[in-house]
Image (cartoon, rainbow over all chains, first blue to last red; front, side):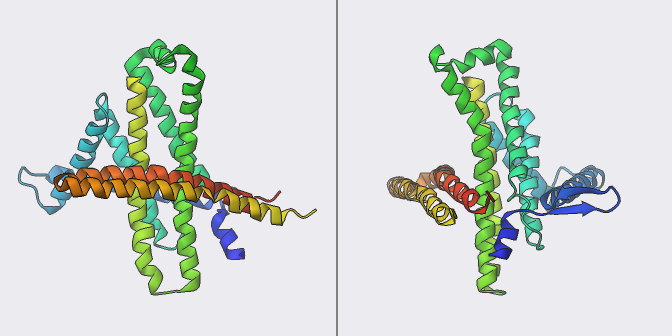
Amino acid sequence: MESLERVIAPGTVSIPVLNIEVGESMLVAWAAMVFLILGAAALRIFVIPKFRDVPGRFQMLIETMVDGVSRYTHANLNKGAEGLVPYVLTVAMYIILMGLFQLFGVRAPMADLSMTAGLALISFFLILAYAVRYKGFWGTIKGFGHPKPFMAPVTIITDLAKPLSLACRLFGNMLGGLIVMELLYAVCAPIIPAFFAIYFDLFHMLIQSYIFLTLTMVFIRESVER
Amino acid sequence: MDASGLIAIAAGIAVLTGLGAALGMGIAAGKAVEAIGRQPEASGKISSTLLLALAIIESTAIYGFVIALILIFTKA
């Protein structure tokens, strides 16, 4: 029970020089950000200038990935999909990278309510920003009373519940996977959990980032069209 | 009075959301299999829709799970 409690509530780590305490998952998130930024810079400086008309294997991989995400975003949004593609790919990479960090023995950073709440807040403001951008300020306010004006309170509550449900969904799924893995490690280490890790650490992350982003896009589309 | 027994019962009741989620997932998966049986060429599209729908249905169970965890692990 002691160790499970440790798993469920993320601990804090104090940084020696600055003398502040940060959450464990915050540290991992910073590491992931540094990794992503350095990777993107390296890609931009060393790989992209060497792109040719006839693609090699690596270029093919990158092009397929970007093209797939772009096509999926365009299929979900009919207005302003172009601007959302980088965001979608970035968040997908971020969530999946967090899952990969989990394989090196750190506590899954995504199973932390503050982390998922941050992502959900970004989605919330994106939904509002897209509505304001394509319908104007008054159009957005009118959109709240869409079918009939007296429905406005319900629509507003629904809108406010969206980030909450996004955050809780991602958090619950990640924590569920984490607990199952932790129990497996406790019961039958070391060989058998490795097979389950393929599902709970890798495939699970893919599915959850896919769902999170699809829901964000669906909400954006709905608020723009309302 | 020590309320830990009551808290455990409350957590158990919260996890009962799994009932509804299981029913919904069963119905959705059954319908998807039917649809693929009727129209095998659309299986790709059906399974991606099914995956998304399952995740959304699952979230009700997840909410119950999160609430149960909060009940158990919050120090009053």
